[in-house]
Amino acid sequence: MHEQILRNLQQKNYAPIYFLMGEEPYYIDQISDFIQNNVLDENQREFDLTVIYGKDTDIISVINAAKRFPMMSPYQVIIVKEAQLIKDLDKLQFYLNNVSKSTILVICYKYGTIDGRKKWVAEIKKTGVLFESKKLRDYEMIPWISKYAKSKNLLIDEKAMTMLNDFLGTNLIRIANELDKLCITMPAGSNKITPELVEKNIGISKDFNVFELQDALIRKDVVKANRIINYFSDNKKANPIQMVLAQLFGFFSNLMIFHYLPQKTAEAAASEFKIHPFIAKNYLQAAKSYNAWKTMNIVTYIRETDARSKGIDNVSANEGDLLKELIFKILH
Image (cartoon, rainbow, N blue to C red; front, side):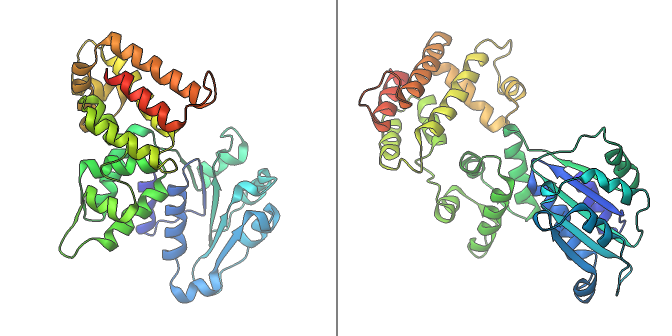
């Protein structure tokens, strides 16, 4: 939906009010920034652009500002940031009863939503644009990274995408910023983001990360797995044990499910776990390395290691020792 909103804005089809809410700030910023930077030209912005912060205002002041007339352009643009800090938003109903057609009011309500059953929220749907920016799920991240890179006319290696996803999670703003940084630092004449480029410019090791550890375990590469675990032991801040355990628990829990799927194919795994087909192939290889009984034991080992990392039934073993012991149990 955010793409349709941006298309309408590019075509200068403006609504009198935009209420942008939701847990994902990236799309809220994208829409409000476009309005702030494109509806008015530079000279008009000096007179007819107002940016207000929720902590510094109240809803009555917002309404009074919206009722003013523009000075130098057909529209005045009012952007209310951090609107989740404003009390009595229900009073917006007074403005919605008679909106100004020469005002574009943008309300950015981040990290939450408003009850859609409220009368004034329903009124926004009729009068303007009500947009909910939802967090992407894990399985949506690889396609999103690929699409964002393509929008910048870049190619991106599948391993590089996985590195970014593992390291940055679902933080779209941070991922977009890092990809923009890679655009700037890319060697002349190149348009491909490689694992080496990610490692050099973002600080994610292409050889020593959770994804590579998981790959070593899948292939039962004892030497590689132990080399990575030793690196983790020496770099605890970059590779905290809880992050490592969460990744391994998620993978082996899914592998347990995979063993009992009617069709044990990459396509079936991609559909069941809502993941990219590139990642789904790992389950075929892992199923050959670990049968269902061994997989069930591995899930138990990870649970036990998690408990011990939190001080349960553990007197002296540190995080590095716990991980080394876990990897030994998985591989043998």
